Image 1 (cartoon, one colour):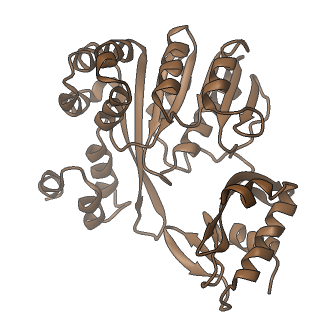
Image 2 (spheres, one colour):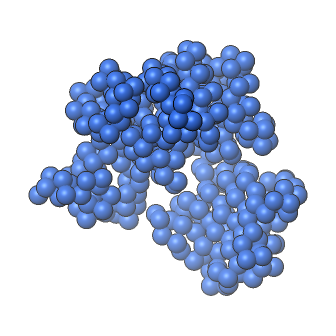
Amino acid sequence: MEKILDYLEKAVEDGASDLFVVAGSPVCEKKDKRLVRMDAQMLLPDDTRRLIGELYEIAKRSMDRFEEHGDDDFSCAVRGLARFRINTYRQRGSMAAVVRVVAFDIPDWQSLRIPAQVMDLANLTNGMVLVTGTAGSGKSTTQACIINRINQFREAHIITLEDPIEYLHRNQSSIVSQREVAIDTQDYLSALRACLRQAPDVMLVGEMRDHDTIRTAMTAAETGHLLIATLHTKGTVNTIDRIVDSFPSGQQSQVRVQLSMVLRAVVCQQLLPDVNGGLAPAFEVMHMNSAIRSLIRDSKTHQIDSAIAAGGAEGMVTMDQSILKLAQSGVVSKDTALEYADNPDQMKRRLG
């Protein structure tokens, strides 16, 4: 049987996004949302233990945490190949792993079809920007492109808090401090609090997981810093409701007021299968204006979608407008557009 490094090399060569090492199945790779077997040999529990042991050797990391807790999350780099984000876990009594492939170089935003109005968020100097979407929708890549734009053209101290670090940023015009949770710091909350004493101009928070982290992030954005953060939510309305609902009911009115003042933009994204067998991103972009600020403050978030649809002149776009543009330009099929649309009936009428 091949070594784990052989599988990693093939995954990078094939342009795969993930590698799966699970007993009872051959080693598989995910390419354009499809699972592909890398060989015919079924893995036995001893095979997965050996392959996962090799991953820990490459990362020069102890297996103690994995042995104790039953799962582990870490990253490593192979010189000349790529960077890998690794999650190991136990299933049915055997070891398993999922390996995310991350290229060394930060990809070109234009080749990824990221809209210019998303990249223009790099020009903001204060407030909170949220990049949201479901797992695997490309949030980390979009954030990395925005941070790279700031790094190229501004003299700033950028601090990223990530779990784990995916893209490596080399210092250009800016200084970039990248902190990995569980290695460089205990957790997001303590790292964020410490971050405010490290003279940051821009902060990136890999994930806001609880109301303490969300409150600290909003306070940090209020103090004149630009804070870019991630939430696993679908759509601007769900994102805002998720933040407010994470607080006790007695605090929610105050949080709405605070959020309406500190929020600058929300970017929601998802990946759609394109006509060439690849993936195409669709983006919803909301920029804060006085109308949306009032809707958040008055708990009328259900009206925000209409405000985004009417805000085209301000660079706003709804998810369905983005999907419609992809379908009209022939990037995705009409069936795909209907499947992923928030309002399929309206999409069907627009597509004729």
